[in-house]
Length: 201
Image (cartoon, rainbow, N blue to C red):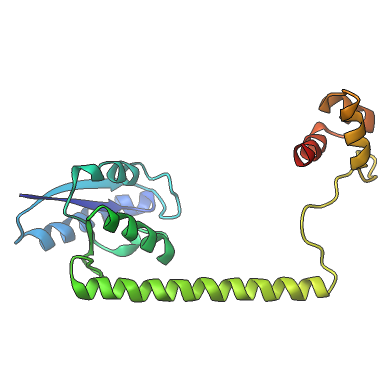
């Protein structure tokens, strides 16, 4: 028997109650029915795909040293948060010599030449999308700066609203005062003092 891992996930308690994970399991079992596969399921309940803290997902990744032939999911959105996340995970599996199949997403099967080609095409689109986003972000930032918008951290202020004198903070520090003592002397909280000292030292 060939070991394969199967991952199923429900995003919410409502999905769990409606039997989402069981339907995913049925889809996967039907797919492997004619194959000599030993299925090991990993199941997360009420865990969003955006949440990286998915206990059974993490357990599955830690179990990859058991060398499953392939990781199978019923649908791709049960596995990854985004295209970039998917590609990163599939590259990780590929480095370990493990295939990936999404039963309900035709063509997503890295154990076949066509599946690997589709993956390369998706990777090219993901890179193109990243470049477009970076380009738009840069253009937007330049336009905002031309309008006088300032970027970066806001200036630090004391309790009475005046701006903190960074040189004075450093001067007091070099005289041996602690951050708390400097904050008391300058009538502000210790947080901005610590921030200034961290930037300098």
